Length: 253
Length: 193
Image 1 (tube, rainbow over the protein chains, first blue to last red):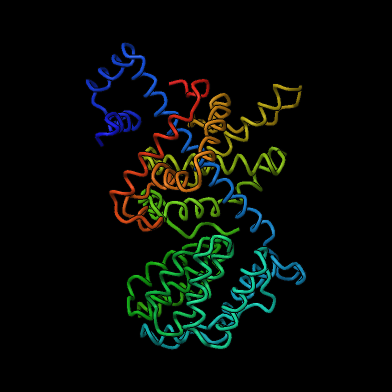
Image 2: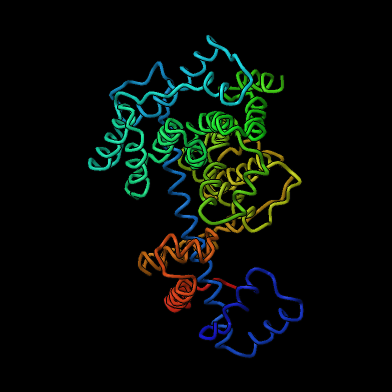
């Protein structure tokens, strides 16, 4: 950039990308040219300011995750009146239902699409959809989930999408989770995968991973599904470890 | 808390690709090893606030090392994170110990020297002062500088995210914002470089 002749040079200096000769020359210039030295210090300090602001943003994000995690319930002891916790409870209940259902029914076929149908069960939404968001945003989320419950999936997907663009909306992972399932219902497994991949809340991650494997099966991409299932079956703390192992055996057979 | 469901390679790749995915992968890294806080709580009896801070700083330090390509893949991410985190816990204990006489617990022999720029308290204070300058820039400038300078978005991604007409407009605006930031910083607050 002509307007900022030293910008690229100083960026390379900051990143340690200058050659030995270039660096020597720059250091020499700093000692001889006070204005240049001032510019170097301003440049590096400005970059440090950006880095610090990024760290602060991340720390704030981590605090939110930590407090969500801290309030994550053990299903038997969490009172339903604790609105924020109900979402986390819902995730745990879905996990339990899927695991129980799989234990009872078991797989019956090795064809990708059929296996999907055998293993997949549409998660229900929790009765209490409260959260800590402003009333307007919470109401919109309610509406999206109502459309989902009413099997009006296209509308639900659109409402989830609107919410996900709203910076005031905090329950991104829950929205992505149900949006992904709505997309599976209208036979858009590729889009569902994209929604599951955006999920970052620790409590939803394992479920997103399991349902991603199923979505790959629905797409007929068995190898991708197997890759995920292998990770799950190798993770002794994964709620679907056993089922993933069984499914892998089915797919191999 | 579950153990992570992502391989180190996935996390490293996710962070290094920069842009919209970097924050998500660093947050996944954070969520994957939260149980370290419980371990440290039992071992060192630090406050929750101290432990959360130390853990967050450790994840950020590791995330930045991965992003900058400074992470040596000789050890697993979890091992590396554990060491950084516990070094930070030890730093906190030492900090308290310099203020009053306390019994020092058995400190872990990590056999490591991994330190990062967050470790130096003087620099940390200075960084905090510098970070506040961004708040004075206005939201749009702050955002564009963070996207570019911290999250590693490319110009096209910033244009899409912030509604710029094209990459050229982003480059121009980014330079203006960066120059504005440079001019705002008082000489007293310069990093010692």
